[in-house]
Image (cartoon, rainbow, N blue to C red):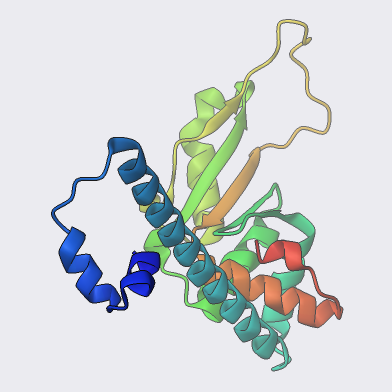
Length: 203
């Protein structure tokens, strides 16, 4: 329509009025919708990236405060955490380590208890005491039963002798908190503490 407006010397809005009742063929119409959808998708992606970048900047600022709990939590996540773009996840068999990490999320990021998810990873020989194991982790982390998710059982393979070395009496536990601003703030803080830049964490 811009070319038509230029040729006849009228405004684009005038041309739009002239041709609004003309039906486009199906292929061209679909192509226009596809381009519009792509532009909207690109705009949403750019907006989300800008929010992640802002959260990382807030994390860098937080690191400058010199809070020991914040430093400890960030280092734990750097060493042991699953590196996702939109959530914090950390698994371990040490209840003290995980309790410190939960305290870090709650104290430094005001994590809502209702949104903290706990998943227990059990071995086959834990099944008869599954409730005991789950209760152990909830008590160790100071979290209510509503935070518990369905436990995962690591069953023996048919080739196994059904023996485990270095047995973990309570298996392992994963703490997850799905919040983009929190994990991106942690990423920013880690980079500030470590004195490096890692663009891949921005996504």
